Image: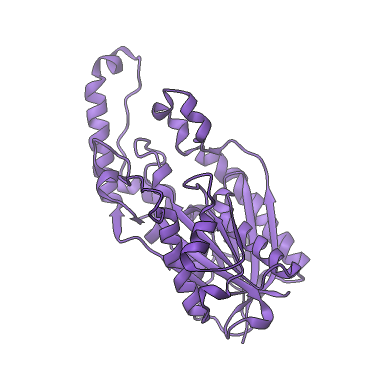
Length: 372
């Protein structure tokens, strides 16, 4: 293959929230809601809301902690929404700002100047605006050349963008493509819903995909990429610009993330496992050839089962490291955070898998090999 991952970068927000803090705010909201609707609850008109707990969150997801861009509004029982004021057009937008921070780290680690970049792809689960493209704003802020565009494939946004970047490099349209993946997921988190209030954290990652003949030492050769989608309503977010035509849209829970977790688990685990095994066979690789798997960080139980189906045994932390307990679900950024934080110890010739899966359903597998 002609494309490599030259470097990655990571932006971690300054604020952190524990499960205990989330539970305290959520339960205070539940108590107040039940008190305010006591008559309807007694009459059976409305169901009572149930408390959350640290034990419930950790058993359901494996998440213990998350980093967030804004903490006070997120935990404020009067609000339960991050307080992130809209910025004027003349100021760098929030998603562009965190993308630039991650991008500068990736460029520095690769020994590149922003002027070396020929293209920028901004891919994430939820875009801050339709246009102008955030990628073009990042391109401008960095001083990069070429072109930029945005794309959205939910939790598979980063892996789909990596394949796009590979295709651009292979086609000769660019030699250095910067992928940025700003995931400010707490903005579409329903903090009033017991089943989802704990899922997301915020982060941003950057991946520099380049032609192999300009790769720095220690780059990762991309052995193959594979993408798959299958339509499902089991993870959905109906927010969009047409919603403003309905005066009641702000009170509609489906304008935030809605998911049927058990159905997602049952359907996504075999879909992703089969895709990985098929991709291995296409590349004439065996599961035993994999030194490490950097899986999407959504749910520890899903990761455990997928890794077991692929490897044929329960994976160790070394074989399939997790950052879910620390970062929470960061959508498309999760597998890249795992790769960024847990790849430096591998040596030349080691092979690994970056894998995503999420709403759509969408799934992506990127097989890589450490170069000398």
